[in-house]
Image (tube, rainbow, N blue to C red):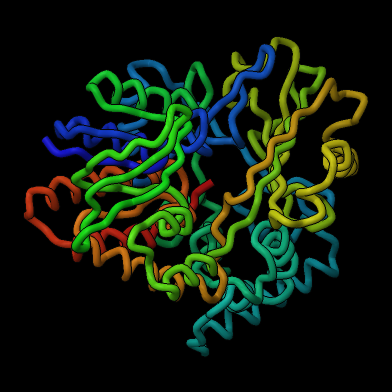
Length: 474
């Protein structure tokens, strides 16, 4: 039996721990926060169970939905018919957007510009073979200027920053339809290859919110004599001859040094590199400092009526609205919200050092209400109270230098015999919970083979290339 130390008790670390426990390894998970779950956690507020942002359990990856059902237990998941929309120019549109609906739903001038842009783009795509480098290139080449300005430009500024400075990889991973041709096919809910562009259904726990899933993984680990230790601060990852031999971490009772056979890290790359001893070369640390993130503000509105929207969530690409998306929590599971009330969650993405992030809660609430009242979705008089949560490093920003910086870091880490990184933060991979679980499945298989000396790092490098193919399906 080998001891495997996992850094981070989010969905990636906990699912990996569960898979490794099943392979009869000794598992110890170290988590900085006082609670487990990372972004995939829930919290109780009065008579309500809330998630840290809206989460759906869904996947197109074979085996992942079965895994959700396995860990949740028999009959512990609801099957929810999904409905989401796009709010644009004062109207609700289907999501993903459909060309006929867009053309007929906007004013004739914008509609003609949109159609002309589609036509020009279609002709150009047949003649030119130009490759895109930036987020802006990607959509200008795929949709034309008018559609780019209408659908994608403001969204990029709101969520990730200036689209001229963002990699086309971000657009390809995050937006389900890359060009006019795919948008035409999207009217049937599928792309030209027959893949679903949007989930028709999703699953959600009957009790406990989405944190029920991470709690069940933790229970599975502890039941098999594994450890999940919260409130820890990693002080040193001790390395000898290109191999981690032990970790030193601090708790309320003092520092502990524990030996290990393998380390799987799901924490931020910068945080991991900073505690490695001997210290990594300066160029590696500089590369980690070059990886950028966007912060998240969640505004929970407790509403004095049982239902607000027809949708599970609505996207708001226009910059006039401070939020990117709003969701109604009781549309996921009515029983998790106090009877007779509803909860709307507004998501705001911004820079950690921005004015909005550092504004008062009252100001943030006021800005959200300005937008909701403009849409007539909610009136301030309908709000009983609000709660605000903030997180500083949530969304990886795929800028034009991120791939180079990430390559420097991973090349360095690949030199070590018994270390891998995975997950959204551990691989700087823009992904969802299903991708995290898939990563953990692949990682558990790799670790098993590596400890048995049946494979080498090239296998993990192939896995990483596969992880880059993930796309977000809303």
